[in-house]
Structure formats: C-alpha cells, structure tokens
Figure 1 (cartoon, protein in one colour):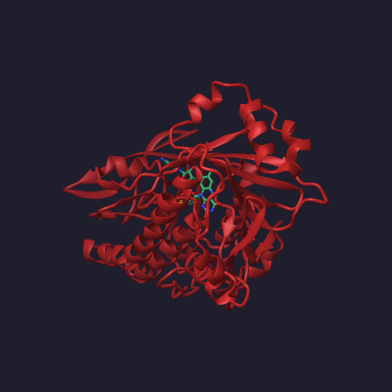
Figure 2 (cartoon, rainbow, N blue to C red):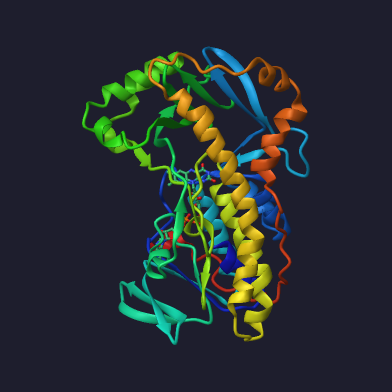
Length: 403
Ligand SMILES: Cc1cc2nc3c(=O)[nH]c(=O)nc-3n(C[C@H](O)[C@H](O)[C@H](O)COP(=O)(O)OP(=O)(O)OC[C@H]3O[C@@H](n4cnc5c(N)ncnc54)[C@H](O)[C@@H]3O)c2cc1C
C-alpha cells in the first residue's frame, strides 16, 4: 500500500490487488516504529495518523520472577521517542485513503493474484481471480507484496533460506483493569513466556509456546491456557475466563526466512514476501515500509518515463535493503536462540539476566541501543519521490464501504 501510494503520488499508474474485502484482521503488525512515523511526516500524513486510536510506549520492560527490568528505552531518541501501537486496519485504511487522492492509484479489493504471466522469460503481469471473474492484468513491473505465504514467491520459483524459530505465538485479548500495571512488558517464569501489550482498554497478549506445540495445546481444554496465564500474571487471575475458547486465540507460526534473490525479470518482491521476520522487536511492518520507500525511490522516475525496468535496477533495491534486513534478522535469531529458547525450557525457573547486563541496563544510553536498532533500523529510508499527481478523487470511498 505504501509503495502504491508513493508511486501514484509521483504520477505512476499503479494497481493494487488485495484478495480480502477489507483489512479487518486482528493481531497483525500493530507496532508503528519511529522509522515509519518519519515517513508519515515526510508524506504530511502524521497529523491524520495521530487521529487514529493509539497508544505510545517509551519503555519496554521484562518482569522476571517479579522483578521489573527495563530493557528497551525510546526516550531521548530523535525525532520520535516512542513506539505507536495502532490497529493495522486503521493504518492501512489511512494509506488507502491517502492513495485514493491520486488518479494514478487503483486499489482493487477481493482481487487475488493467482499466477504470473511470463513472456520470453519476463514477468509481464498476473492472473487475477475476482468477483467479476478471472482475467489477466498486464504491467510494466509486478511487485509482490503478498506477505509471508507469498504465492508469487512460489510461482516465480525463488529459493529462500529458512532460519527457523524455536517458538510460535498465541495471540488473544484480555480486558485491562484500572489498577493493572502500566506499560508494555514481557513476563517469564518456569518455562513460560508472555508479552502484554497495553492497548488501553485491553491487553494484547502474546503467549509464547514451543514451535509446533499449537495443535497439541488446542486438543486440550482451554483451561490449561487460562491457568498458565494466571500463573504468570496473578493480576489477570480474575479475568482468565474471558478467553472464551480456542476460537478466540490466533496462532502466529513464527517464521524467519529470506529470499536469496528478490527479483526476476519484470518482478520484484519486498516486505514479508522477500523476508519473513520474527515478531521480536515488532519490526515486520516497519521493514516492509522501508522496502517500499526504497523501491519507490528507485522505480518512480524510470516507470513514469516509460523506461524498461531491467534486473540491474531491481538488484540494486535488493542490495540496499538486504543488509538492514540481514542485521535485524541476525539479532532476532540471537534473541530467539539465547533468550527465548532458554525461557521456554520446562522447569527451568525464572531466566537469569547476567549481573553485568543488569548493571549496564541501568543506563538509558544502553537501553537506547535496541530501541535505535528496532525503532529506526539501519540505513533509514526517506521519501525522495516527488508529488506530481495531485488530483483529488473519491477521498471518502473507504475500503470499509466495499466489504
Ligand atoms: C499474528 C501476527 C502478528 C504480528 N505482529 C506484528 C507486530 O506486532 N509488529 C510488526 O511490525 N509486525 C508484526 N507482524 C508481522 C507483520 O504483520 C508483517 O511483517 C507485515 O505486515 C508485512 O507486510 P507486507 O506488506 O510485506 O505483508 P502483509 O502485511 O502480510 O500483506 C500482504 C497482503 O497481501 C494480501 N495477499 C496475499 N496474497 C495475495 C494474493 N495472492 N493476491 C492478492 N492479495 C494477496 C494479504 O491479504 C495481505 O493484505 C505480525 C504478523 C502476524 C501474522
């Protein structure tokens, strides 16, 4: 959506295919980091963004055996010193509405790309399944942003490297009470780990379980999960039954992978389609947006001028974005293997933080380091595309109306 907005704004006709009728899916990437806030500011969308329901977090802590340990601290970072928690559907609707202001922007909901059209070794479009029937859509360039289960990745036969993950995540809501702790924090004890994201009137809860254990858990009564939650966070005992059943629990099968090559002639992959991220640090949407900005910066001028997009240009986008993705994935893998795996060891008691690290974490400048890495990333992107097409059309035709 961000790439389409940037290209349409620069006068390049773009068609976005979205297979769903709306963006209303709970428990998706809701963590909008400073790098994304910066892009919104550059697009003059920050004020509109601030009107969305949201919560700002400056400090992320761990509650280990009852002891609170601040770990990630955004305060003091510039220009944005917080992480915004915003429902992803609101954020996507904002981008879609911003895109609709440009004549060159064409968002087609309930349109599923089902395959690539290849001619003389070049991808020249996609096959589309829609309520009006099946058809072909031709394009100067196909950009696959179809997420972690990318069909286009498969259709193009692009090999990826799977880095594995020791855990999956169960997401569910729990009501918040006025006397509950503030902030967003993780709790680890006795082989269990849970992250509580403060969403004002509810806790967005991530209950971390060993990889592949989801099916066995779901075969048992929901009481097992309710009791485990209450054992980890006593203050939630009075509300544990609000997890009504397994239907109220979504599973994120954690996946960390990266394509060796993000392109083919006429085709580029970005975001999760090119590199699925671990949920650690909540960087998924932010890296996808950085990819989109880098891609738009490289592609807007040649596409507008009708120049043929060759693979060298697509390779330069991968070169620019692969390094930041690689670094973040490496840090995520280290955290997964060294901290999360140990925290999930049954009967292991509360995980221990080495005394030296505990001492270092007393200093804000040390706590700022992970906030800087996850919040701003490496090789931060800026909007360099012009605003050419200013025609205002159908601003109010929200995606919500089409569902
Ligand atoms: C349960 C869960 C929780 C997460 N939590 C966080 C978090 O807190 N913070 C964070 O930063 N990230 C989080 N992520 C990851 C984050 O959602 C992704 O990294 C991010 O959304 C990637 O953006 P994307 O545009 O590459 O792909 P997606 O957001 O996955 O978008 C892909 C889009 O393409 C559509 N689509 C797929 N296939 C087709 C097709 N064939 N034709 C047409 N449309 C298609 C999909 O419907 C979807 O709208 C979470 C992911 C999950 C699943």
